[in-house]
Length: 65
Image (cartoon, rainbow, N blue to C red):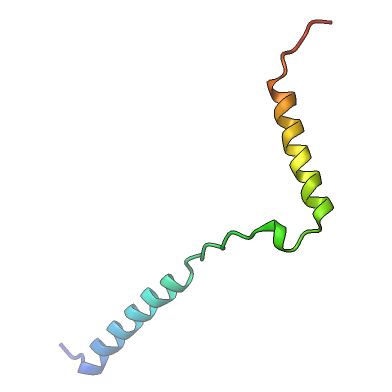
C-alpha cells in the first residue's frame, strides 16, 4: 500500500461532510399560526360563516326535481 495517513483522513473527512450536508437538507416544520392575530375581524367572520354554510350544504339531502 502506497497510501499515506493523510489519504485516509481526507476520505473520512469528505464522508462526514456529506452526512452533515444531508442533515441540513431536512425540511423544518412550520409553526401553526393563529389567523385571528393578523386578519381583520370581518374576514374571520366570513370564513367562519363559509365553513358553517358548507357543512349545512353537505348534510342536506338531495331532493328529486
